Image (cartoon, rainbow, N blue to C red; front, side):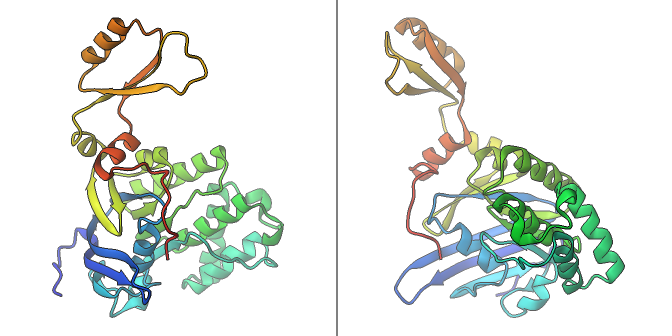
Length: 301
């Protein structure tokens, strides 16, 4: 397939299919593009195809058919060349447990083509940015799961690649560590790096992405900015409320097109306990996909 040579496009995907011998279709005709400097969040329930899609972008998984272009490079025909421009954090990955944190990062820096001085300098920067400096001399095997996750993020940043592909980057992190990673990623995005990431955290998608893509059943069913996605549904406000003397029952949920209609309903029903807010990203997802992000499906390949 002939791709456009437009230099503003970092990643372009066309009609991406992945089928397995058991008949499972993990991705089913995905069309996708990310501009240089754009941050795109991939949202979907378990089994929707997020990880399969990202693994094809990183060349880890070869598609059954379709085309992938990374900065003008055919990533299917030239995977090693395409990977030179990427930093990747997979959903799961092993680490060298007997190396110290610093040794681990410096080793991978050299594997990415940095000289000894560059690897040492970048390692120091990453340790500081990810608040791992105090753990620099500890063996990786002594660290918590959240600290190991931050090491995997750090490995993706080594060499300052122009494209980051991150699969659930902050899974397992406590709230403080997650916000540390968010702050760092915001700075990286502001510098012009293209970031494509999957997440289950709606606030993470809202905080970090310039565009959001919903994936379901191996297809990207909708994408756009948060404002564009919210504009696709008629109801702009969600009311959570309790009736009368209800205290234990789950709150009722009702949607309204405008604030005045919600207020009128509250006054008419004499509701004293309620929460009124603009519709959330999950409300938008449910409206478009027809199910909640917390719904589970078959495990992704």
